[in-house]
Image (cartoon, rainbow, N blue to C red; front, side, top):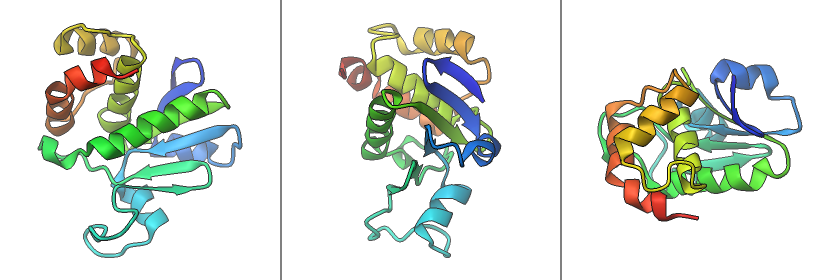
Length: 162
């Protein structure tokens, strides 16, 4: 688990397991397996698309995103990512937020990177330059092709958010 800024951390499923009883944490799971599946309770290949919790589900102090590390940007939903960003913003004021995925290389640091963008950290810098600067802050950042393409395609939108 690595602290990025005050009250905001990036980590792995193992970090979540280690801290899940800690009441001053809000957890954001950026992985379908095992967290979203376990919380929503589906057993097939994926969550049924007509399920009201298809994109994300809340249970207590965890937000579970139905996020896979796909190679295509179409598998990343703006609604899901905006929910994660808003949850980070609201909960950082109350305590710690751990954003996690399986390896803490692609999905969870990408969400934290986009959060920092919306807060002006990399305001109006070209995407590649901002990504390189975030990698200095979080050296394990290695977004998969799908989420990397998603961030590049939506870069202006996140730069304009406040």
